Length: 342
Image (cartoon, rainbow, N blue to C red; front, side, top):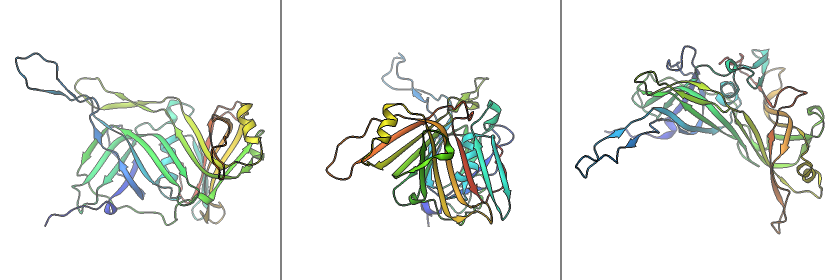
């Protein structure tokens, strides 16, 4: 009898590559995902349609280069799985430090790349298993780089993460690995705290927000290989990095946030998720924090657009801060060791 597949049997694993962009690693870091749109494509494939060859038929296609993605992996934000560990390093690179120890818990500080060498050199390998019993439906995506990560924090319910990726090539039928998942439930919307200050991060005060979204881009692009007959990418190049925070709040009888927009006020911002499960005996609770010392409002002032509660959505962008010497950084508190070298 034919075996048909179900998505709940599928899984995604990741591992950092250490040899070259074309040499796959064996994925071992799991993430319980909801969907995966990551596959090898031929974006430049083109029908040759304008030849004059005494015929009404088409005869050939130009194949162009091969590329994985761009595509997305979407899932809930688990504190002890891929998005909170290796995934943050894949986004920002090697400029991260860690304190703590096994059983005690770990605090990771992820800074933006300072040099080109701080960013992942060879990318990562992702196994996308479609749920088959053997190796047949195991797809291995090699030389993949994270282009953006978006964290969607709802008013209620689990926080979701979208990781945007692009990569070099895909193989099929590689050995199926066995995923191991964390035991902590996802971050939830009520665990969020957004703080703003017109002076420093140290005195930022909480804002009563309903929901929020964080999007961090690193500007990475793949470089094609034109050395002979290769159709694959040979490396990567960094572009401008961007951190944006969007939040929706109930409009109060106050002009405070309106004046931030009107006056182009520099704001020190902390957006923090703090779990209720501890990461260790002394490191505190699992947590995810984005700190930006110099953000500016991009949105228009609030409007009267409803007879009910007035909800206003604001967007902010992080600028480089000369005093702190960085535009933004990420803090992660979890039970995972290491500095996530990429």
